[in-house]
Length: 312
Image (cartoon, rainbow, N blue to C red; front, side, top):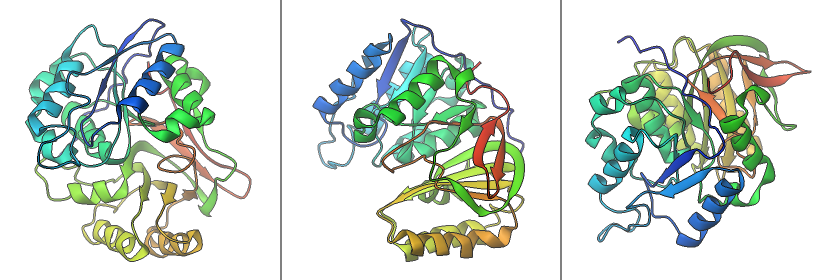
């Protein structure tokens, strides 16, 4: 399986209309409105999708029916007046709706920035594999981190509107877990979602040649061990060029998590940077997926630098 070369969507301009969708879990109305206000403050014109505040009648962990969530995303993506699609929150539900999308229609539509993380990882993978579009692993509109953390807000704002100014991702906590330097196409997201994609009809065949970004939340060490071991045993990690690690909120003492990550991933013999500053932690920096980048892991430098701006 040969993946299409990812296309970088265009950057946003002041006044751009952006759609906010809920492909996964239910969205608190007050947090959604606060997030929309932040986007308005950037000079954007955010519009909430029709079903963004829906709740499933039987399963309260879903934001409405699978069909409605898929329809909102597809309508937003295929609407030529919409310049970007931002997710309202994660949770769970993408895997139930991703195959309901008309990917022929999605491929035919002009590419645009797509932003989210956590459960949205399954959509990042789908856009990469089935549409050949580069996406943004970044905060969601109704997420508390986005509402409260200035660094998270500014990272997304600059990436959307001034992508030339944010070519390097990293924060003070970042450091080399395994030293080295690697070049490749960025991919990844929530590692449990990457593992859950294995064996599905349109899954990425492997991470070979890529710079893999992974993080997760509330996976106890033995479960995280199982997830990483599954990726190793399947051969999905064979040939990966380098690995950038984000946050591991609620996954146990970081010393234990760090030892586990080194135990499971250190044998790959590739550079690894830890605590880069993306994911479920107190700061969630926006990271482009599907673009060429360099991972630096040394005693002096622990960064991810994209060859080209995230958006064209």
